[in-house]
Every structure is written in structure tokens, then in C-alpha cells.
Length: 309
Image 1 (cartoon, rainbow, N blue to C red):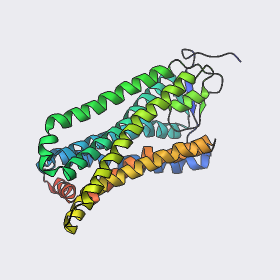
Image 2 (cartoon, rainbow, N blue to C red; image 1 turned 30 degrees about the horizontal axis):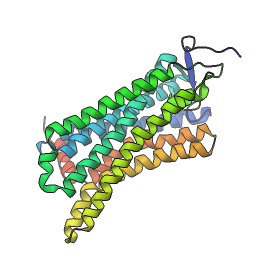
Image 3 (tube, one colour; image 1 turned 90 degrees about the vertical axis):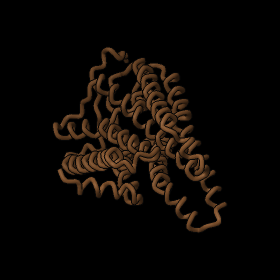
Image 4 (cartoon, rainbow, N blue to C red; image 1 turned 120 degrees about the horizontal axis):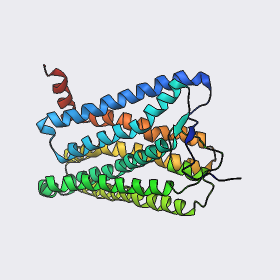
């Protein structure tokens, strides 16, 4: 079979979540609703943290960055999916696929880093409360966020450059609603061993590293809370990180569930459907999780809605 190199490939076919025409109107309405809720919820958090001076703290600075990353993460995949359903087309250009891979990896990994940074912030606030303002100063907060953005951007550039070396055969169907790097590797006809090694190395370093940092931070937080004598102090300390812990659990459990299920079963369509949890549902639920359990944020949102023009 004659190979086609990457300069000859002009388009891929995104099979989406279902090929049944009867499901397309339902999927369009469902994902349009989820996308609009994600945009509105995360934009409200960003505006509230900017306009309310009481929320000008490291925790809300990191939260606004997480909300922005979630907006970009969902915007990478859902608009193209909605357009394909509406136009009854499953095509995506080669350039569009590579671009989608870049931003999908970039903002997905950025979520990992920001969740780890927020876990470190909670660790300092609970375990070293007297030194919190000294440790979590503006310079350190800016460097943590900047380092997260730069690292994810460089990683995405590396992964896309590795994707550009792939050559493809006649089968250009991607059983997903978004171009994913691992799906391109599975479609490639040339030697993919360097791509697989690089992909697993990046996963261990950029996903396992932040997860290890989160687990370490919360192990210290739990030890510090257990050492408190006051039950009121324990409740207050736990309530400050309960929302973040809920988001971390939801994100990583769904993410690990996707990749563990894909390693057990060869049903790529099932893996694509499960991936909706971490790529669409989690960014949509994050604003509700953080706002419903946070009196300061709820107060800022009430002020925002009551403000007269």
C-alpha cells in the first residue's frame, strides 16, 4: 500500500460520538447548551474576580486562570463539532487537525498545572497560615501561572512537531469528535515508536507530575487538619479546599477512566464518549462547584447582578 506523507494529506474525517442521523439534532442541542453554560459560568467567575476587590487574592487569581483555560479547552473542540453536525459534514483539514491538537493538548495540560498550583496555594494557606502572604506574593503567583503557560505551550509545540512527521495510508477516519494526538499515531503507517515514547514520557511528566504534587499537598493538608484541636478550625480548613478537591477528583477520575478503559477495550468510539466527561462536563461543572460552596464568590456574583448600569 502506497504511503501518503503529511504534505499530501489534505483532510481527516471526524466520526464524532454517533453516526446515527437520528441522534444528530439531540447531540447538537445538548452540546450547544453545555458549551453556552460553560462559557457563561466561567466568564462570570472571571468578571467577578476582576471587579470585586475582595477577590484579589492568589486563590481567585488562579481560579480565574483556570476558568479561562476551561473556556479555551472546550472552545477547541465543541464549535467544530457543532459546525460539522449542522453542516452534515465530518471533514477537518490537515492544518485544522494539527491546530486542534496543539490547543487541545495545551489547555488540557494547563488545567493539570493550574490544579496543582491551586493545591499548593491551599497547602500554604492551611499548613503555613502565618507566612501565607509572604510566601504567596504577587511575584510568585505570576511566576507560577507564567511557568504553567510556557511549559504547556512548549509541550504542545513538541507534540505537534512529532505529529508532523507521521505519514498516513488511505484510512483517515478519526473515531472521535476532536483531533487527538494518540488517534493520529494509531492511523499512521510509518514508524510511530518515537511518537509513542514521547507521548508516554509527556503523560508521565506533565500529568503524573502535577498529580503527584496535588496528592503530596493534600497529604500535608490532611495531617495538618488532623492535628488541629478545634472542630470549628477543622471544618473551616476543610471547607477552604473542599471545592478544589471536588474539581480535582472529577477531572482526574474521568481522565484516568478514559485512558484505563481505552487500554482495556479497543472500542475507540466508547473512549470518545467517555472523554466528554473531562473535556466538556468538567469545565461546565467547575463554576458551579466553586461558586456554590464559596460565600465570597457568591457574594461577588450577587453584587455583579445587582450593579446598575
